[in-house]
Length: 311
Ligand SMILES: [Zn+2]
Image 1 (cartoon, rainbow, N blue to C red):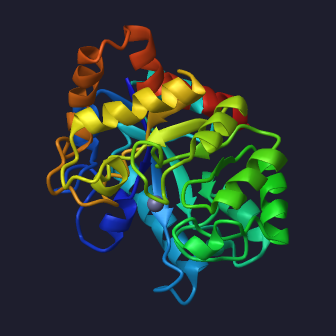
Image 2: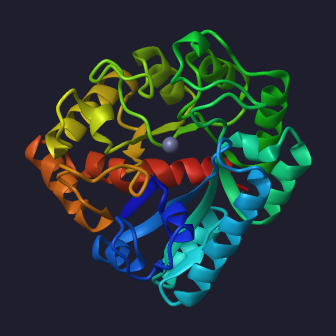
């Protein structure tokens, strides 16, 4: 079983006539089936720079998501909580979870969060790479010490109340601290790696890894080359190094997979698509990970988070 915590496939689909069933991107229904995947979180990435009305763009993406799911209803179905995941699994269907990647989509209004929740969204990445009403991204050095804004704290409480998973990937270092201090529920870093292994701002410090682990949260390992090492290759071996480090720092219950497929370039990646995740399983076996820990990394930790947070 595989549970991938982050892909940007809907963004690819919305900009093309391609379909979710079979395409040349890294995630489609056929590739998910090939890898025996049971769950995929589909991120709806909205660009605040490109979109005049980010909410409108997000709604368009949600509509496209549901159209694609409908066309593949024998194989994949929306899941909004653990029980729905189990029901889908028993029907031999992949669970598709919806996430919004850009809290600016809310345009500073909690009612937009509640409406998105009603439309099936159960995860939200508080920021992308630019400042929004919630807080600041980690990509800009000047933002490191800038934490959540007033609206950001309100969003955290409302997401806690609604049973939505707070995703802190992309968020400023101080913002992550604020979320960890303030959130009543475990959090997710859906697609970030370890800064001690690869010094990139998008990656997590050991302190953050400890905080996320202590809080019962999960870190999805990103396959993006520049987050893995200083080499222009995305080798499985580098992914294994990040996993080893995160387990050393935070324990075996805090790491999962957050491929970022279709949001990253696949040039020189050892795994080109979600159908090739078996290469990572082989890599972990080679590195002497036990079957039990491999299962935790591949899906059990992610599933526990869903069970603990989603209502
Ligand atoms: Zn991202």
